[in-house]
Length: 64
Image (tube, rainbow, N blue to C red; front, top):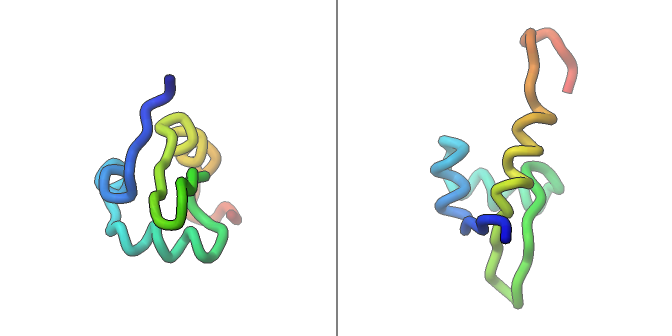
């Protein structure tokens, strides 16, 4: 089974604030996530890694 991380753990892994992830979720940005019930949000480690790979750049001039 794939490792599941909560928002705080994911934010630590990405070296960002948990609020950033929450904002991105409402904007349809950031790594894919699972919504369990009304409030529980979890991230698969594999989805985080995939998102990081998709955002890899060799220059700051590359468009997103």
